[in-house]
Image 1 (cartoon, helix red, strand yellow):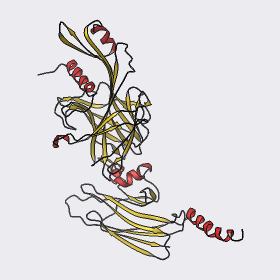
Image 2: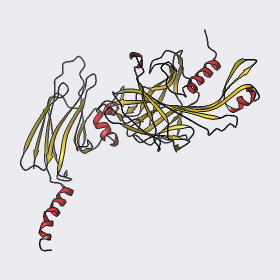
Image 3: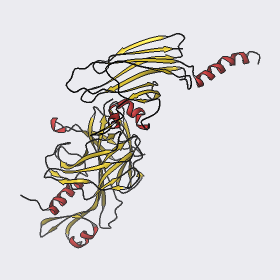
Length: 172
Length: 271
């Protein structure tokens, strides 16, 4: 009994954290590349954190056209963010506060996310950035990371055509 | 030059019903082809309905849509808009206004009979009423069969919802939703006869663009005791799935056996 209690404490503590997670700050920078074409439309972009089984752990941003045009509402093309759409985009009623935003112009676009309100549980994750452009292509970039982090970490990945460098900084 | 409608209908009905055996390389197949299967906002979708040898290649005849039922996610039936009957295909539009899965089902059931009069072969295809009038029950070499056929496709706005069955004949129940198919992920479907799981259903799956291949390249499956099959998709694109089964649950006492068929056009997405 005397030996048993101290041995139990670390697992109790771990259990506590497994449930609640440890708060982290994610700073994402996505380079939307200059594309020389006669008819350029800003891309639709979805940014989210996925679990190893590809289910969505947290949606971070969806940038799409929130206007209605001759061809219908901007939501008509959300399905072209194919991975995001089937992994959970189709279950969300857009627009959604804190998630949806207007399309972004060429250049470095950043977003910052502090998960202290509902921290992600310790484990393996991937940041996913998916983009689809009218009269253009689709591209998806993944950056693996694990939580919690002890000190600030930075990771990078690059797209081929539709995405430039994607930069992920994680701070404890 | 002009084919009387009744004849066209009859021969197309024959095409549906003769598809009951399996998919021989030179058969005429009946299918519905949607312009989109996955949508993120309410809009029109256009459909082709045709009879042809290759998928999805218009070379033979239009498929009549008089027996088409369009079921919205809330269970209401919709009427097709802008129906046009061409020489090679029937075209129609459907306005999808609600979130969820729409089912399009061309369903036919009836009796087939063949017999001889003075050594000459005669053939009948139609409903029980016409059968009673036109088929002499004492005819020489009389062979009677019953059949139920479904030609189906699905379209989803937003998140997929449950697929409603008619519980008549052979039908597919999603384990994997038919509008949630991806390359690299096997799909599981369950086959039901009159709403109950059906074992030993013969299933064949062919990818579109078959015209550009030397062989049809069909993949064959048989349903297990729970009526289930697991299907793999070699590449993204449109697929034609045809399932057949014979049983003896006839409703007309003259018929010996019942031929059941279910075919569905499915879209497999790229990862």
